[in-house]
Amino acid sequence: MGELVRFDVDEGVGTIRLDRPPMNAINDELLRDLQDIARRATERDDVRAVVLWGGEKVFAAGADIKMMAGLSPAEIKPVIAAMQDTFSRVEEIPKVTIAAITRYALGGGCELAMCADLRFAADDAQLGQPEIKLGIIPGAGGTQRLPRLVGLSRAKDIIYSGRMVPAKEALDIGLVDAVYPPDQVYERAVETAREYANGPTAALRAAKVAINWGTKADLRTGLVIERETFCDLFSTQDQKEGMRSFIEKEQPAFSGR
Image (cartoon, rainbow, N blue to C red; front, side, top):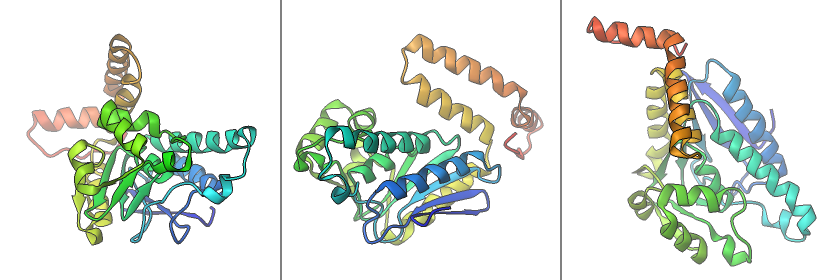
């Protein structure tokens, strides 16, 4: 495992922790570590939910500009392709994922946070896509994921202006899902992730697949995806346990299988 991203597992919740002080700037090494840990989080049966965190001081302040500044179009293409591929790998972890955002999630940091299923932010956090101020545009998913979260006009305002979005506004427009005091953000994310980890994770995985892939297609295709994933769940222990416990008026004991 690399040195710039850490991975800890406790009671079914895996924490993916960016650890490149002072601002968790995203470089090639961090991307390699993140891709490897996203794969581990996907494959490990003892990981039933995931929290994405940058530590108490900052989530991630974006890509390493010094790394990119002097590159040509041909040289930057594999760099941004690696970012897109890695972030998509995080987005596709087949478990509920929650980003715990402290202080700043800017540029690539905001793009990474948007790959999580849910985003919890500190009340003093700021998010944004400031790339326009560097003479470029978001390149690791910002122009695509942000409109899907907040709508076309709001996304254009944020991207065109490059401004920072304070946590309260981010909550109001749907960019984040909850706001807490800074010293509670990670703890609340873990508590919520643990609730999902103790739930019907096979069904949660199916719901994530149906939503993420179905909303990228037309309605008829999305309905086919929903139907097939729905039917597949009738081969799982969780479906049997969930329906049995409902009929017998008991609390279900889900296994994730």
